[in-house]
Image 1: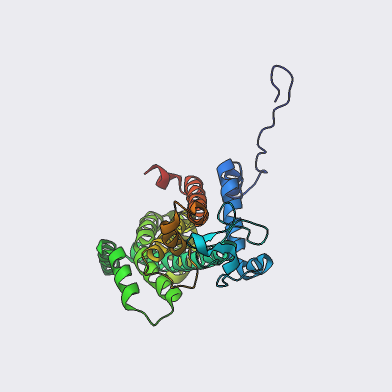
Image 2 (image 1 turned 90 degrees about the vertical axis):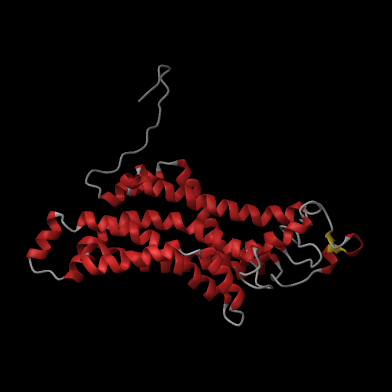
Length: 315
């Protein structure tokens, strides 16, 4: 294809003939600039979280190490130098008063935030998919019981319960507790999506043929129903990850999340509020990390839903 001036115009390469639905979906996703940028941001923060000890070692500071020479005791402990003390020694500056290295705390905070978000999402997806398929396929009493449990869980004031649980349970692993509590209230949403998909799939011709051919319920669920709901589940999974990250940050911001000195983005934002006018970089850096991560997962999830579950995106 050329313009009137004769300049060739590049068009997106079409998928090769005979490509399967997953190859077509991948090609469609990679055509979108927002998806490519989101994938880069997600990969960057995932690598940052996985390699947090190595990265903080390269920076030369641990997240709990104080550097009193980087703050001015005569100015209330404000960082010495411009932009919150950013220098060759402290790549993102330091915390006021303590002098702890912000780069080390940000990368370790990414590890905590993404670990809790991914683990809680895994619980939600496994439990929700299992409950939704069981309710939709077996119907009857199984559907009634599971649907009432979904309704009860979704109607419960989950945030209040999370705050109460995190405040009362003191001598436990906070990361495990947050993962379990967040996952406990997240599964009904995906269960309802999967239940609706299963109801539309269980009377398809290929499912009836498998049933007439003597296939048991387990084989039908794993070989016929589960692949049919995989697309919406993947799209929904990507959409709930940013909610999990935001929930962990909110709990840590309120002081009922991970305990100091373990770093967390929400905890850092809460501590930076007192210095937003004198050291704005202390507030901007963890807030920007949280914003970019949530935005990237949200854009990626929206694109996946459009491609893998177009009917759901129009509803």
